[in-house]
Image (cartoon, rainbow, N blue to C red; front, side, top):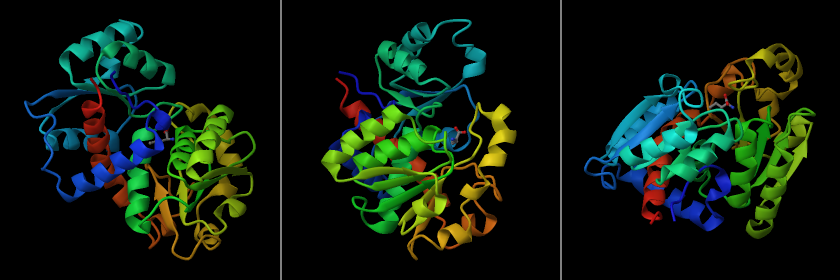
Length: 308
Ligand code: NVA
């Protein structure tokens, strides 16, 4: 069976630990693992803007002994020139794995059904699971543990990062509290699934509209842009609603004194995060960005090893 990583719960809690442990080993010894020696090619397909995802996958695949092949989703004109089903079979005949950033989760599911090789979701509107691996690696690095920690996700809980945090957080046994305005909470089905997972891991998921209640006592404070890709036409309304949810020194004063702050970037300083916080002593955003490489190398290696 070919294994894919399309959403955070595609890895069981035990598998998540395996991948995070491998990510730590790969960070310690970046050139010791060569599962792509040949070099085998990995297709990196982007229909949407990218910086961290492209550079971290390209650098990571090279470190694994492979060849990163970037495909411009716009040039490929997927969906209009040819369907995802056909593109999947073309890519699967050239590449050992496919990494795809696109809008709709349903499309990465179709890619996985037809590619015949592992498919990794490099961000859809619904999930950003590769980012969460890097985030969890970063939290574990700074806190020494995951299970039992309290995480505040403050801001637009309805975006890919909100959904991924509740799912991956549940798998990791974290207590995740989402502080988001009414109408901007993570998807109800995702929350239900996360709560199901949390029953086994000892984690929990809570939702509140009060950002300070979310931040209270948090070991980890997470935020993301208030205007995700594809939501640009809602900017004006969102910029009116979200200001009370900014991660500022004031909000942080409600968290644990040694709280760390994560942001998947790009950051809009003065909006979802203040200049003082992102540049301040609690911020671990640069470690988090670096860990994209290690975590993605690990999950790619793990998927290849576990695909027949
Ligand atoms: N929620 C953001 C994440 C960017 C990495 C977006 O979708 O634009």
